[in-house]
Length: 242
Image (tube, rainbow, N blue to C red; front, top):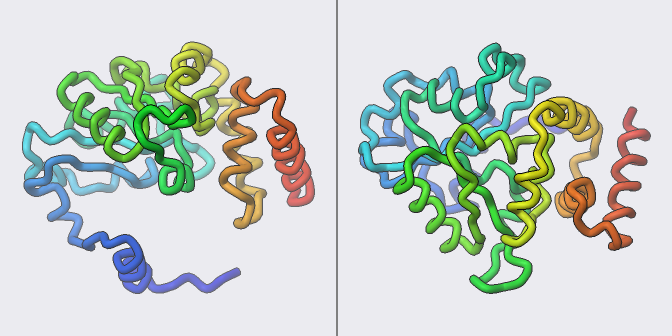
């Protein structure tokens, strides 16, 4: 096992490589135009209760979290049927916009394209406030991604882990169909099975191979040999790690 770096050194390395400016958690929301919550769901409940007290009322909050009980432990409200992002909104005491949760980091960094490119990835955006949702849609466009209005926050389960729209890098033509194909009663079982397999994969397993498997599972690229090869490799790697 690799020795973990001290947290301060890790943060300084991230700051140097990304240009981000580290700040105290009590200061992160003060006066910002938009706040992105990108932490494991189990950590949301541990955030300071007054974290958003300095956030302007007009500034959207983006929730990017995904609920994985194997990592987060069981959250009783979600297990009881509450939508994941509605739980986050309740914990934060603010409305949230659900976005960025169904794309792997590698695609987010390396697979943005100009508007009109046929392979441009489309991401769903859910929320109850039309103005905030449009701000996020415009942000996605500037970042090099299309966006699909996926309805109110109550519909954000359609692209949580275990659904067809989770991480297959679909185009704007493909995404609406994947959202419609989602089955809520099947999603949690699919999610937990995938999480067990992912836990067995080596760190160097290619993110884009995982995307290919996700596309194949969603019914995309069924005639592309590379997708089937990726699926076979995923299964073989998981068996070897068992």
